[in-house]
Length: 424
Image (cartoon, rainbow, N blue to C red; front, side, top):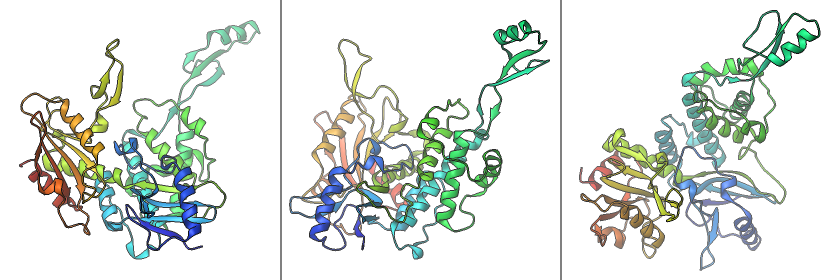
């Protein structure tokens, strides 16, 4: 059956049939995008998931902000990047600090792009985690011998002596590579290698790490369960492997990598383009203003709360973490929130986005007041300036300057536009 194809944030390439409209209604009602979205990095956009598809007041079905494929009841919905494969690859490459080869000429669907993005995210996670060595997990191992190996097990040693055995019971905790993390990573590697069909996709560092992992668990290890993976106790050294293991588990379960799926349950995989836009803007902001002067909102862990309990000030309600803070967190120069949505009339700026930005700025009322900005995407098919953009900059009742800007999708141009936005 022919897939129903959408560009993200747009209507389908063809008018859906009556049966497809009914199927889309079921898909929209019963599909939680969180279950199918693989996150390529820490992102504030992940906290506010949008719909996969939605029907407007005119009866037109439009895709949300995701790209990928979902399968259900023998039908397939494919959501392709409206900005093109190369743009998405550049954004992901900048966000992950890796090179992504989109192979645009070979794409007949978004599943190949998804495989490339997954491989890039997986490669980046493995490289980052392996900086301090392989994922060795310490596990207790009991010994009974003439000499102790590790900590003496006093109770068991006494029982041995009572039985007339002149031996010592002890417990050691050696690092063991045969563990759920290693098995998950090796299993994911097999899945990606079958899908990509090209040499060199792993990169030099991953090629160095994997032989040792395969030697510990074999080339076809059984995939651990979610419970086994969640039971792993990470140390500060192995903690970066948590992200690598979670992503590997999604890949190893073939999420989004199947050629088809049947049954009344949805299957597939999605990439959140709003998340990619946010991560791309963070990268461009660090280039524009210096990495030390830019804080990603996901790095904040305390302070930013909408409400605090009068009975217990430590109790908070609601987060107040913008996407990008330029300057000191306590006295920022600018607060920028990424918005992967059109800035065009009659929609203009969404009311909730205005309230959100005003709440961010309202937490900083001491001079000098920070600049606030909502950073939208400059879509090629939307050249006309919106009212909020052309009549700006604006000013809050307190005096904060606020701008609504559409930024370029290429890195160098985006860096230059951010500098202009903040007056260099």
